[in-house]
Image (tube, rainbow, N blue to C red):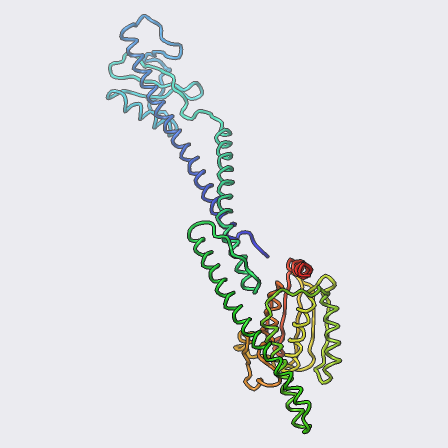
Length: 438
């Protein structure tokens, strides 16, 4: 199961959202703290200014009335708040800040709770308590507007960051798709060199590598195809001359050797062939049944071949590709395996599978990695009988060229099994490519 968090875009998105969320939360907390501190400082300045204004008013114009919310209270009045009255911690800090701004030995108290907040101040030179109003230290302001703006800014920031992350990973995604095609042996067009400098350098290096590998592969294919093609004519003449021999035993031996050489040459040509398969797509189950039936009829001494075909009509492959895959695997099973040989197809949650397995001794675990390499024979004694070491290499190339994947291993502890998997999404492309080739 694919998880979005496993992709580069998913991880960049998670990182971006996390960083933005943390930064916005930190800014919100900082704004709240700074606003509270600024409010406290403003309240202290305002209260100090009012107290000093009242003193100036009393000293210069004692006959003029004071504002409605400012008053003078006699020290003996029962309204005076108690000196040791408990007040909240923010008010304690507020009182200390006001006292620091007043002359020495100034008494500063807060009014009783339950009414409008007031500040009581009396210096040593004051005859009465000066009572002035103060603004609440925590003004009841709604957080809705602040939170709304934070949500809006956060949303726009996330969208912009996600777009930037998408644009940043897009060249890498294109390169990853090209690497996948290259690994399957499919043609890879030049990848556009875009994105940051490091990714442009990586893409440029990949394009150069693909060109060099393609050039080397083409040179090898041309050389191999040329040699194989040039050998067909002398082999045909050699067979014709062998048929004219009088000695039957010698003639049969020469003909058998010529047939083996001809088979090797044909394998070379198939391996060197690198163009798209232009044959008509066929149902794999039906074609497997026909190939197995023909194989039984032609190879009388062949191992018993059984079929387990359950993929259904939706599983289609080019006819020539499927025939080459089956013929190579059946020949390999006949030469090195043991009966019965089972050709099976199945439908899975991801696509379709095609497998060929025998009940022989299989291949040693340390040799499995070399089994599909061209011109590699795991047993040096297997050099005769027309075997070139290309059978499994041809099968792997054909499977990957069709967009599939393959796995070779010993099945159930005995016998070799080649399992080929074809995802759902590649089958329409294979069919379309075959039809367009016509």
